[in-house]
Image (cartoon, rainbow over all chains, first blue to last red; front, side, top):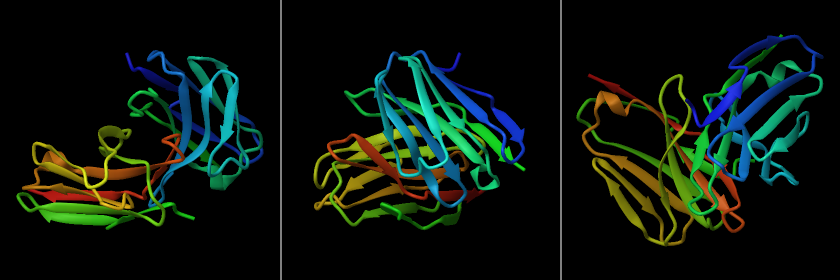
Length: 112
Length: 111
């Protein structure tokens, strides 16, 4: 089983709909991240959380919100999806001792 | 704007040729990490460099961190088809708490 699990893996939705992407991890890490990947732009940080009570904005947080429901769960929401939010979204965790990022398999979102 | 610049965007090589990708930051980095993403996959950690001028090797891969801690490179000797994928650098700032990814270099290896 994957250490970092994302659901759904693929989602097609319409403009204006609310979407939630969920992430759960079994690595026991406190630090969790949401990244967005667009072709030619690498990975851009949306939000990150260093523990259950800690939420921080990343480079591109506008139009997104997050919830850290437990140490193991970190969800990303698009309150009103728009077409330019079509992208591949990755959740990641890290161990503060070595700072290596462990990525989930990704959630591909298409907004029509 | 892009915090960490990475070049080239694409590289096509014949199997057996060498490959290098470069990352540059306008500000000093606390550390740099390198990741590989296979087609259709997710980024997988390769290595982390922390010290000024550090050089690390993993078989055919050589990683360098510049003396000023503003640039880094990944060099692959004698590429193989298994090296195909996109290589990303990620520069750490603010006492390692935030990582800024480069745009990636997509490597294609022709057999």
